[in-house]
Image 1: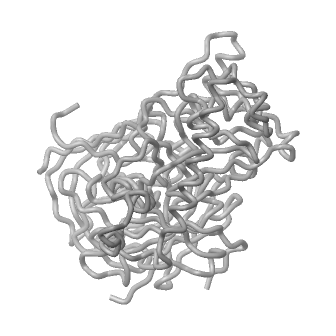
Image 2 (image 1 turned 180 degrees about the vertical axis):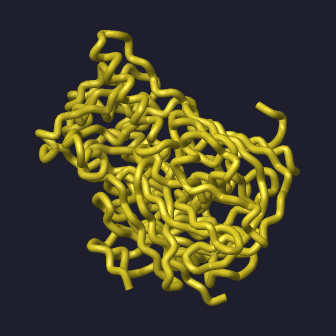
Length: 490
């Protein structure tokens, strides 16, 4: 790797690195057109695993960087609202324009990365020739930044140069937006797997590299949006329409109240993750799978409600600890004041001097506290990526092949929901969201994918299709609420 600047536009597990040698009252909706996603690499690897299985060879593990990012928005003539188009429930992409006069491109709008890149006219790779290419010589507003870059996506790489130009997205005009134009792209970006042209990052500025200001950051700094907020309402079904909103969020798209979770590290949209449960099960699979041979764990202990008498002695204390932890979290939620937006430090100041340590412990942890497990909310990932032991246990429960993800479509009605706890709130992941049904092949596969050497879980579109997601850049928090279908576009 060139000793320059590292960019991780795709979640850490994609091992994405970018080498750079260079040092107003507007609410905008953006249509997302979904196609394939970061998991292009995951799907390819699973196909290889199936072939090896058929040939009687040893299974290969998914590479640690097997993720590939994709998520996108589409620009619409009407300022404010943009539709999102779904392609086979694996990723979304939309339209932006770059330069003067405008050159149009489809990009994935990705909360797991912070930089923007599009194919350049000098790129003669097959992937580039199949997509729209940017010609900076045709733009009167282009300025070179003289930077070199290379992004590694595990099974594919993008190389190019950096510059800045006018970018239009959802009716917003961003002048002097830094980005990269590719000069070579590997085959993973070829059609039909990759329908989008480039990538539009929506993560925090701290994830960006080489001093390239992320588009959303620039929009906020130049007051091009009303609020430092954006929101996703992902659709379901091939070529259906959802919405990305820049500068606010749409209350028509969710039911109930938003549950706000603090970002634990303002780089990715990373939140604390406390556990995963199956159905009415008593055991947290995150703790259950630690330091155990998950292939030997009796499934009835997870899928049923075992009595203490049936539990191994070493597990009884774990069950008691989990019960106590649930009680603490319930008390913590009650201790929170009704105004969720109130500064946590202010809450602490309101505690009188004689407040007991026990009460103080009920307050949420400070922002710099590091949870044992965390997850990133990532629109650029199709599936649900997590530690291999937990995913292996989940695969056993739902009857999926751990390596290929293959599973029968015949017994989906018998499956139960998983419950995942994020930031102290419990969210449901129903079978229709954690089982991917190929609309063409009519086959089923698990959306739970093992991720090796990743420091966090990645909750992609399989999770986000069930929830309206609001990302608050200024306050560094994420809000989730059950999505309200059918989506209403106004």
